[in-house]
Length: 182
Figure 1 (tube, rainbow, N blue to C red):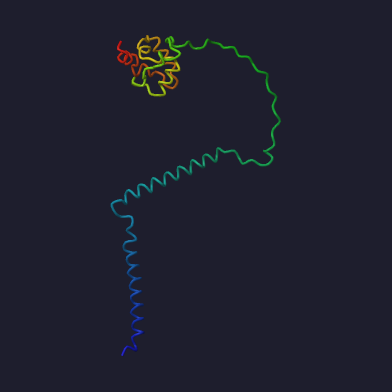
Figure 2 (figure 1 turned 60 degrees about the vertical axis):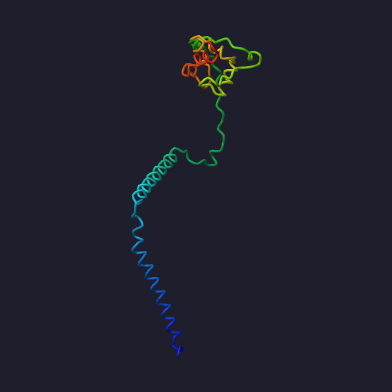
């Protein structure tokens, strides 16, 4: 009774496989062409255009750099040229006097009084590095900073390496007067 079914089962499996392939192909045709539609499609296109512009710009920059590069050296270029004669040194005398120092240096101390310096970092604008710089210049206490005149403030402002103008900007003298009780 089931003798002719082998051919029938084979035919069914082949037809199922063929239907699956046709379905996959139809799905690819229908949805594969729509991959650039959706809520983010405009953003994707914008980013792609931006990437293309950046790539073109970088290629142009590399081309410009290649134009500025000297040609590759050949073995003949490796030879050292004969040294040119060295001219005798010329003594140049200054034509003007060096710029006058700004302000007057305030009186500093070699070390903190009684070995106990004030915590200068409590003044706005003075951090740990600035405190070390102030200590190197001889300033250890609030009363020293509070006693600075305008001329001395100008000198300190001019001599704070990398922090020029900080004394005036952050009003150190007024803060030091408040902290020292003067």
